[in-house]
Length: 73
Length: 267
Image (cartoon, rainbow over the protein chains, first blue to last red):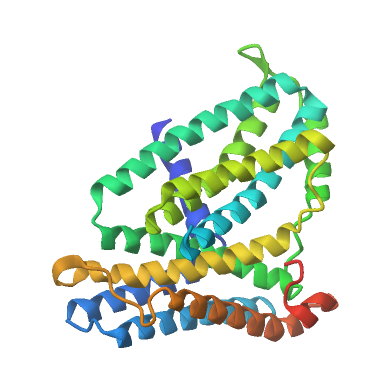
């Protein structure tokens, strides 16, 4: 009973936040992790801010293009 | 109010309207076919559960995390959540996904409510109670999520809560007046706008929040500070329009005329 509740609860939050395309969440997490590594290494100027933003846009674009071209090949 | 507070209020208001219209459709469909007593009991129980959920989540987030950590956590969640909305909006706009149709939703829920058997528990029609509870709670969680993430990141929870309350009153008043699903609300366009705003603010706050890993844990600074939000919004919008144009060739549906002309079509 508890296990079923936990599984349902986890499933709900997965669907809620991650949604239909986990590639987007993976792309966001990867880019932010890379940004965190750079900031921790002492790179904290405008350059890293713009780089991370550009990579987030690129990650979303890649996830969408892969998704659409795969499903309509 | 400052421009940032207006942006916060507008985003939460629009997002809440979209979700509330969907919840209202479910409640009306169930109430009109199964009766109002259990439907309203389910709706009321969901609202209580949402209030508890909001208090616990809000308290936990503000109590445990420093400013940059909070921005990184809620900004990342908002970004991932917003990009899901934007993804659906792009697919709908390019004809690769069906538009959300409130009339169709109402018909389907009404038909399911008529066909469902009778099961009485605690003196209530259990089907009506459960369906209205789930409908209101699930749509409500999305509103609560947006209220908490926007409110905490912008450091103005009262404005976020007030916007959601005003949206609730507007939708309730409209629903009570016409007793039909609010099909005139341009729901798909609003979802597109909310997706863009969530992606914009999610990007802004999550990148700022990366400052949690540097000495002093101070948030990073965007060049141009708050003006960067407008640049981000324009960039996400432009990217979405490029993707819509590119993906339209995969669609068998004719291109929506308004989309081609203005980029503000139903999505």
